[in-house]
Image 1: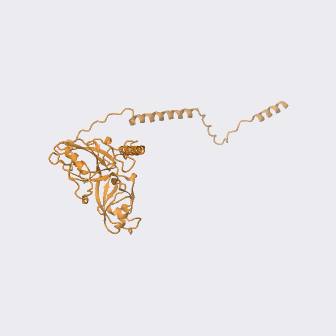
Image 2: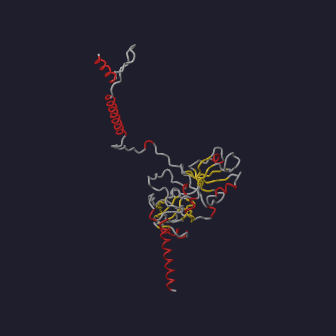
Image 3: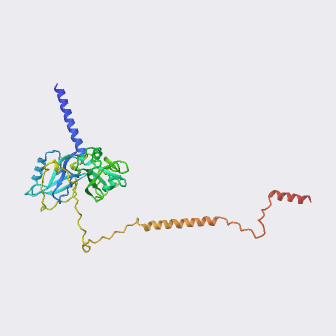
Length: 355
């Protein structure tokens, strides 16, 4: 009896250890999603960013009080937040100062699965004069994130919502990858516009249609993977955190505001205008490009010129070795006669002997 109990306990211990190893390998599947950011100096985007780590540790407990206590413990100093972004499925680390008076960050957070960020629809082809075209949807660069008129669950969620709004205006939150902005689009689904579908556009869903990284970020080198992890829920461990933002000055003000109610859920990323370019007189001087040896176009031109010279010389040698063609016949002289054959020559010699 005791042997059976020991085997059962060892089996439970082995299962727990294997689950822990699996969790460390795949990364966290949950995190605190940023719903609202009242501090524009803090580079956390609502809806897109998830807090998956704090001070070098992975956030595993969904209790917001423990997270807030960890932030308050860093009052007067700075806290390191590991942020997982739905744009490109990458993880970065932000060092944020925590004021001693407020002891908060100015973020509204909600515990949510990372798979929530994979429920997006990629706008592919858009037919002319369709409801999607009239609403201003851009093919291959727009992604439907959700709607304030309801909650979308799974791949068929958007189609079911569109069927409920036939002939009525429907508001959608649409993210554009080229401009890195989120906007609200109003579209009126219809089946009488003269084409197929109620929207008149082709939508992609799944792993091949996740949100890509903004065009402002560096492009992946050949051989690198585009997404982190094999599944939609794959996150990043604490070892994968890389510091992409320096520690801001201690004078920055930050506040922490917990989510008040479910109605406050989701305010897509704010559209912040880019700073104006510096005046012409203050532009930094351009550095001179270094000369590259062995790879310039002049070396290629010399190579092709040398090969062309060799080819012409070879053509000249072949032409000189050939015999010149025979001269044309003289006028009125007729064609040239062929030399007598050997048999005719012998016959003529025999006749001479008989005589």
